Amino acid sequence: MNTTLNRSWADMPRPIVCLAPMDGITDSAFRRLVRGFSAEVVLFSEFTSADGFLRSERLRQRLVYDPVEHPYFVQLFGNNPEAFREAALVLEQQGVAGVDINMGCPSRKIVHSQHGSDLMRNVQQACDIVTAVAGATRMQVSVKTRLGWNNADNLIPFASALVDAGASLITIHGRTYDQGFSGRADWSPIYALKEALSVPVLGNGDVSHRDDGLARMGNLDGFMIGRAAIGNPWAFLPEAQRTPSLQARVDVMRRHYELMRQDRPPRRAVLEFRKHMVGYLRGFDLAKSARISLLQAPDEAALLQRLELLAQGPHVLARAG
Ligand SMILES: Cc1cc2nc3c(=O)[nH]c(=O)nc-3n(C[C@H](O)[C@H](O)[C@H](O)COP(=O)(O)O)c2cc1C
Image (cartoon, rainbow, N blue to C red):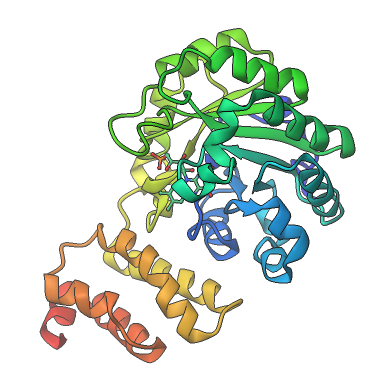
């Protein structure tokens, strides 16, 4: 068994470097790919509805993981403490390292259902969810949230209440709900929060790679990398290893696609791989036509053939396109 599996957040080696949970991105295939790059990265699932998890076999399947993914944390969203409790009990049986509770998603649909960011406006409900999970299981319970609704004035009281309710780690994305993804992430309120809390605190927002995270970390225990890791698992490596050759890049793309194919039919894999490919192709000086020919590959055979041409050189793909 992995020795980090049952380690508490407080005992994890520093810096704690995480792949941020990203819906539609951080599935098991991508998590396994990232694990191949770094044994230290802590992996989070895509967010998943606590109620949906209990009702839907499809959603339960989405959270299935491979032991190499440990330490693996599942992120749940919702607002019903009982559903969180029941889902957590099932996840504990499945051996996940802990449950992270989403209190930061700003999407309209999520917030209108009083989930995600809306929990920042409902402190009692937020704490009831944490207590429900922490009281029912021996797993680590963490919360990922934002600076606040429209400013950071309540960050310390809110996060302190979550810790009193049983949270053993808090991650803060340095933007407010109002900001969505606009503007720059502000980490200064996160540093101030760390001074006030007794549990580890992670910073998140605009980290472009591991060294950038280390430079921003200040008094924090670690950081999460999100968007910068899409199509760029090299983000978790030290600088000297972050500029792979063309061949290495294409090999990783192929490996990623193969991992996706292990739990999907070809048609779905080709479609879902496109999101990742946009990220991978940021690393290439590629003619627009060649880029489009890859992103619009109609089926698996075309995708693999075009990747083969790319491996021979962007100009080879461009000429064929
Ligand atoms: C496509 C996408 C999906 C996301 N899904 C989730 C999610 O499921 N749960 C969550 O807590 N945050 C989610 N986020 C937010 C990220 O975890 C992270 O907080 C945000 O992108 C800021 O970090 P970054 O600048 O490193 O990307 C998502 C972000 C993106 C771009």
